[in-house]
Image 1 (cartoon, rainbow, N blue to C red):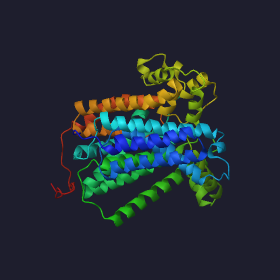
Image 2: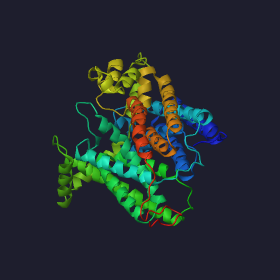
Image 3: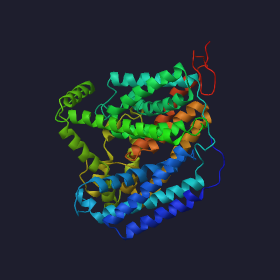
Image 4: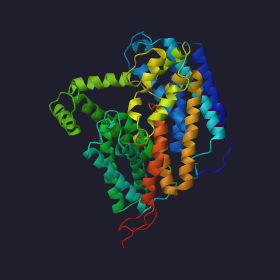
Length: 479
């Protein structure tokens, strides 16, 4: 999957120097304006890296994927709130009850951490997929798509998945629900890849699958729409090189995709709004209420609430700014949070006393620093800050990126090319998440091994023929 490559100057010198320079300047001069400048610089670097991976078939490294997640998640979110939130002359941080200096300092810290991760990833991490990698799909891949879509539909039917994703029972997520959280994004990504590689009746079938999957994503959340589509775009670049599409057609496709995502995000918020002030409402009931509300024209309040939500929800610097400030003044947890997050990843069947340790990262933060958090934007950074302050913020992303690369290497070593690629896509999906705590990262590595068994069974079946299957560049099969 990867070949030896010369480290690229852009990723081990230029980007790290840029991020370190802007980050240190933001740290030394912690003003509201420098928060915006730092966020803009980080978002620009993250988006360029993402564009190189998707548009130029650049090498993929987990270290760089974590940089994309953090720079785009924290940077773009801050830029969006800065530009859209009405606040007069009030500093952005004050709108969220935070100290502007603390928020600027943590923005600088994020840039510095990302610069280090860029350099280490480029110099020391072997590529997961390089520009020459190519995945040829076959009929077993179609079986995987069918099995995956069937599992997702069954998950909705048996209420293992619903509004805002997978469901839990008193904080416990069952085996099938957990597996669905990885099946769904990878099935969507592989369906998109197969859609471009096949033609004839099979292509028509895959287009129906892709549309059905997109509709099923909507109730699970707006962020899922973004992450699923990003994963699909990365999966598509893993196929054989294609003739370059004309610019006008690319604009049409990009506009259609952006419109579909905007429509899907709005539809999700209507489902969310329809359930306010109601308890234990089912997904079909939400859909019915949302449709009734739209048909009656009662959309003014919903649209206003959506606008305000988009202005404020993207600002996720507050939690980590509080943690960085507190960790510089008080003793940290010294690894207690990481140990607890590891415990959460142990299957209940192997851990009789697990129910007694089901508490959140916020609980550790509250006990350590005297906060009163309930539900915040957990991340690798927040976990590192709770345990070891700024040193943990620097170290934890490096360690997690290394562990993800080890898991990907194991999949590549013991599985066929196709299932190994899907397992790695599962890990890539998790790496792209900004708001995912340490336990979510450990679960991704644990579940990738379980997922590998499921994929091994599918891809060990003999290849077979489909009428009118026709892969791209081949004549259609009629017998």
